[in-house]
Image (tube, rainbow, N blue to C red):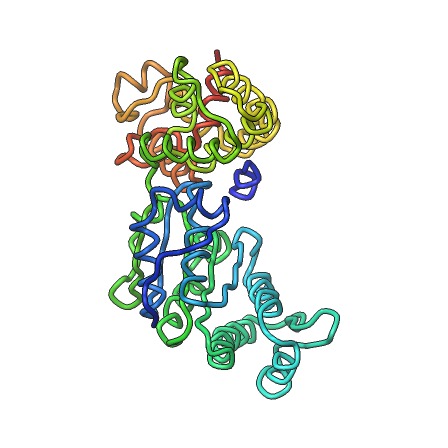
Length: 376
């Protein structure tokens, strides 16, 4: 489901230079978080970074990894439908970042029972391994990351996007616990778990397997306004100060950098250079985006349980910090008790709404606008 939403869209700390536009977009307003991630990676730390889809989690980590001259391996755990598939994705990431001759030598000397190698497919998992053999293969690959780091004389950073998704098949948390336990055994490898904000509240055994946690909150209006002006200026465009164009833009994106990027790109395409952007052009860009995303959002709603759809629509039309109140439940015909609480938790884990700290508002502002338009 998160893949559908995403389709919508030890070294000295240094200041990044020559960042391209896409990177600079994501780092706007995130300098403290960026510096913290660089420090964590430089000190062989491991990290849980949380936020909603489009908040810049992955980009921050990738740029920070570049800052410490690390090799980055990136795995989308949504694609890992079981333990075997997870191992194959990890093997593919290794294939892309290490010399084929060295991978082939490692297989022959240390892992021929679990892996095969040829020039076309490179490192692949042997078919039909038993559960015990999968466990052994898992340990081998984690050890290989350390071997890679030593051979390359570089840190290795393994980014695991949507890491909590493995719980859909790791029902007893055996894979997760094993992974967290192995994390501290590799001094040249850092593990970055990317998850939704809801993951910050999950109880894990931090005493045995400590992880630094960074949460990316929505950006302030002032920060986004500054960024938007700079991006438009690069394309010889600016907001008309005599119209509410900038306010309309900021109201639409609600501090969400991903949605802000999408709207800016539309405005650049829509408007001629050296022209002023008025309320009309901003509204036109918003309307076009809503139209283009309509089918995607319809598909998203079809994947959600009915009680989650009902709650999502209610929060879009009538934002509240107290959806469990008697008045709100009666007003919107919501189910009481466990059903409502389950819907709240479910939407938080999918990255669709914020937690109580952010007043349960929708985490994807353009989705909120689409729901408002659809229900009006």
